[in-house]
Image 1 (tube, rainbow, N blue to C red):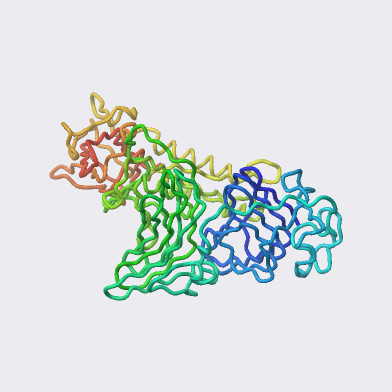
Image 2 (cartoon, rainbow, N blue to C red):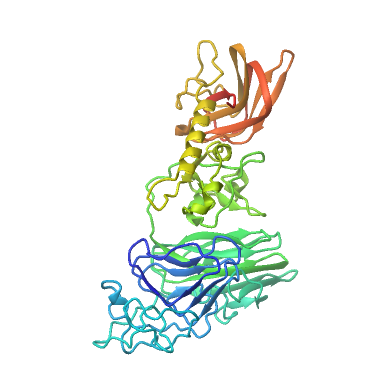
Length: 553
């Protein structure tokens, strides 16, 4: 049994769960804090059971469930102002009446004598004998961590109701709170037991909408939700707030989408909807509007360089993640494609979204040197090898991303020997391989001077062009490294590197974007003294800062 306070930015209950039974916990999420109660990052069924817990959200911010499987089971929990909760038999949304919820923990989260959570729980097999306050476990047990008879005294102030918002965005009650046309409730869900099915007949449309009240005027809101379509567009949108916005999904798997809208100077309502115009079927689930703050006033529209990795036909497509900020995605021209890939700032997406300006969207690759994020002695033999780390370096740093490598400390607070040995060997290999550029043309070149802001560009304002570098002696290489001067923005969309074999040019690398760094491996070593770089396409006059040839040690 535990008490968890989330009155600051970092709640004190977290972890990774598989086959875990969580019972008799108390979580209070205070004003200004948003917390995900259970966050499933994958569709794997975790087998998590939550019984006799209390979760209370008060003030601004949200507390919610983000579930991607049906492997989380709830029973006899008290959930106050909690969004997107699955079915919770025997549960309650009544104020549990903490003695002093904003006071010191854990005493402030004891229950008042008038609490409806007293004796309202269900027995859990193998439970402990006493709670953390020293009270014997009640029979029947209380809901929450406190198992005493209740604390007498003045009645506590009631928990404030959550600000008015979308009702049943997870369609757990069917369409009772929705105005629908050619739409029905469905059990084909992303989470929980309910979802929305849109059945648009030929010559007609399908929609379900709800008017959200209690919004603040001149305030930025984000509306997010999940859509599974049939290959043709289905829209999540908002209207009636002084404008209209929507975001469309065609993917045939559950896909998260989000949009941002700003209420008018006197507007306190907005209509949220899922809509399908073309004949066919689609599903919507887990719709949720959240406030982002007062409307920002832009004094100028600044164009920021193409940061991160934008995708072209032959470009690098980063893998997707669920925690995508919808506002930033639209500013960068981000869209999730069928199959789950994400395209960032591709021409098609920019044309579709018409962003006012472009934001840098830096990529970060998070990975642990061990199978998990925490140290376990049993995993000493499973530390990633130097060869695996080198491949991760190529697919992260060498694909215009930042590599964030987790190194968990052991119980002595130190990094274990297998980890440090692998990391040291990895670093030594990187330095040995990429320490010296084998391409050294007489008289130098801005492509080989190791200065990021010293770059080669095609003449004039051309978006394509080529340049040739010669080395005094033939060099043998199997690695090619390119960099752009990103202080001028990421511009290159596609390029090729060729070598002169004595009679003709032979292409050894042809790829998409470059960005801060691109590392390409050759299938076999090549030897040449003359190398040609061709920029095949770019968003603007490109500035290539580096062309390097290297040989694996």
